[in-house]
Amino acid sequence: MNIDTTAIEGYAEMTAEEKVKALEAFTYEDYSEENAKLKKAVTDATHEAAESKKALKATQDAQKKDKGSDSETIASLQEMVETLTRERDLGKLSSAFVAIGYDAALADEKATAYFDRDLDKVLDCERRFLIDHDKAYKADLMKNTPRPDKVGTGTPVNMTAEKFHKLSFQERAKFAAEHPEEYKKLYGG
Image (cartoon, rainbow, N blue to C red; front, top):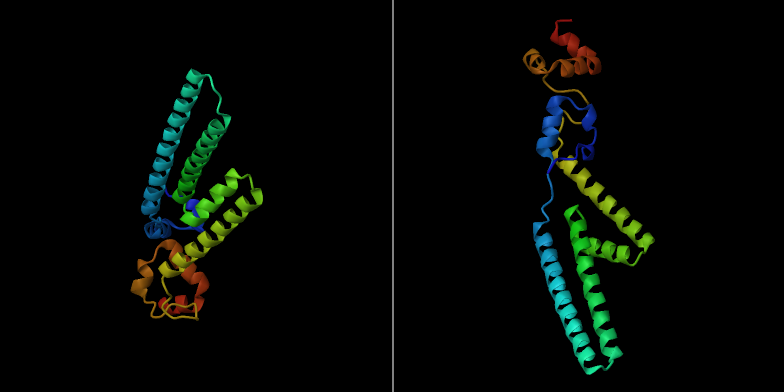
């Protein structure tokens, strides 16, 4: 699976070193346990639907032999098949939502709203997902963001000529532009 670099804020403007650091810090959430539960639910629903279809077929065949019509039984079995088919399809859709990052409860809610054609509810679920996703992403970024040497001043502490020469050309130019006094000190000015 490829990493979606559009999910990394400012990726296009990063230097190569910053891109490597950003990509090394990028993590995917593991939903394998939830996916396994949903797959089992889908498998169970599919099995139940198949059994119901077999039962319906057997009932219909028996009715043809008897040349009798028990419409209530057929309607009941058809309703059962439709219900089980819906549950199976809801499970598949919910599993797909979990695979892209939804938690299981929100994935179930969105899948149900989707099948009920409740656009307002679908959009509300999408909005909540994006809010939660953005909060988690920002928290992860903050957790993995290195802290400056001297908080609040914006100037590095103890910049030496040796440290300065280890910086890339772009970093040196940025340092010189942002800290002209410190730059002059490094070059005896």
